[in-house]
Image (cartoon, rainbow over all chains, first blue to last red; front, side):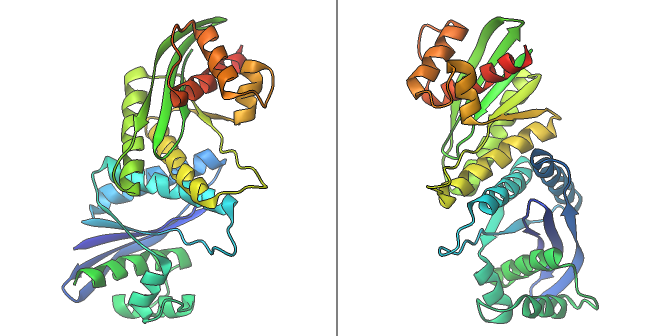
Length: 156
Length: 156
């Protein structure tokens, strides 16, 4: 099963592709989409780049991180921006008829590290360990790979 | 100049197409996209339907209402949903290389009615008067047509 994980963001969107055969994990690629220009342009770039990645890697499923908002610290501005980025990603999957699965950041951390409030470093460590990477991926790419690994564990 | 106006919403997205030659306004069509299913599916429907409308009518420009949020009453949940819908619309325009112009609700009201705090009824009245419609369009379609008319006035 080929899984494309995406960590959405209007400025940087991370992505990571893995292939999983039962408990055998294979890292395929990962990286980040850095957007520029005005806000509308940034969202258009996310859509177009994710579409390219989907067409190139033809994943079985697209995994995207669910928006997490602390009820005690809502940030409507950044939520709106993140919503746009996610809308573009869902659209890129929709046009190619791909299935989207969502996991919350806590579900991803819990699946990889064993606790929902694991640190970023712990998540990156488990991503590297699971995929046998010698070098830490960029933060956003690591989050995207973590989402993909999370889904793999949920399917096994 | 053919203008597609869009009033984004994750449950109902209004649209309206007009053609403007100097000060001569021609109504072409309007309606609303009613979404269903889970949230991801709703966003996918908006993208796919807006894409169909863009391809069918081939507008010179796509006008979309900017998100308005009262600072004293932020609603992060609905802002996130609206952000997704707008992300899907921007994506539909991006894939077809169409230009997107944004206006705030107040700019639209001020342009059509003369005051930024005009009522819904006043906006609908001006939409019908400008486009010589015998019947009020649906609310979301009227808002979309209002955005298109607003842009036409800004271009003349």
